[in-house]
Length: 309
Image (tube, rainbow, N blue to C red):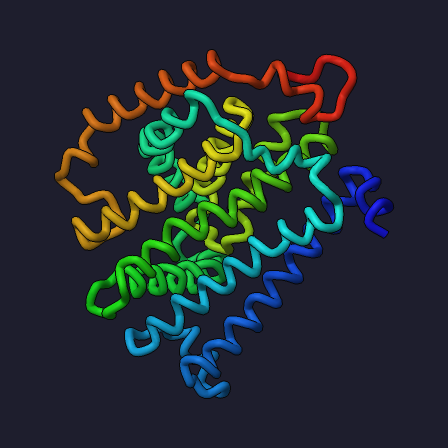
């Protein structure tokens, strides 16, 4: 069975991996609910209400349920994929030495703030106030925001290490292994185009969060993470950049009590936006100059002739 599975083309592997991921997300949700009812003694009949209306009394249960869902939903599919299909089509998850791009990656993702902010405004314009889209998407968005603020609020008594693990560490590792580690190389071999594989992966990355008010910012962030992998030849650059992005949000809340850029601060000034944008462009040019992509393109895309650059 294993040799047959390993011999499957990238397309069938992609389909099976997506099905496996959805299955693991479902199993992770069920397991997390089981932990909520057994370990944290939340009555089963009350659990839907606790999830729909997160309160400080259940913050510890909710954060560990969230951690379990992330690990099972995003981490386990990667392990299962490697056991079933091997590492051939995903190049050992690109866990290689990253080179100089590793040091550039954290600064690059932080300097993308103006682009992310502008895309967030565009995202809001695409969901008009009072529209059916707002009615469909806003409740989910508000619930996700309430859950995040609950985890970050020091009044809940959660250990900072647990919160940091949930906000910054687990998503950076599990999500990057799944999206840039497995999905992106499979899509590369399916499309034979690196740009298509990066942007499709970024779209899937954004969609799975089910937060459509942040779809465009998360799409752009996913694309930057994808290009970091290609430029460096290593998944570690994306993991580090993802970690720094989430950790900076955690620190921003600790310092200012909000996830939004504080008004009348240096971070919201025109000078900062201009300097940050210029730095972002300069770092992209540097990454492209140091890129290992021309030397790995044939293997990554699975082509025998020169691919689209």
